Image (tube, rainbow, N blue to C red):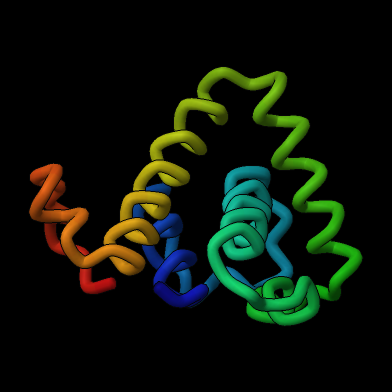
Length: 116
């Protein structure tokens, strides 16, 4: 799975246009979605904060702030936490399937429509 795939999936699920994600817009929903991408990208890829943040035209300090913000929102906002868990579990299942090709068959996990 690539960082690009992670970001596109999250943006699509949030109903946002990934191609417009690097503009200067500071709309809360867009900012939180970018931060979630950076956090999950850090967890599921080996990319540096500089590269993760750079996709959105931001620097590594913004990425670090984003990771802290995700942790804060996870602790304080139930809706955010529920959304985050769905995404995390989705990517975790993909990661397991990539590491163990028999995982999908043995547990009947279907990753519908995903091209990961």
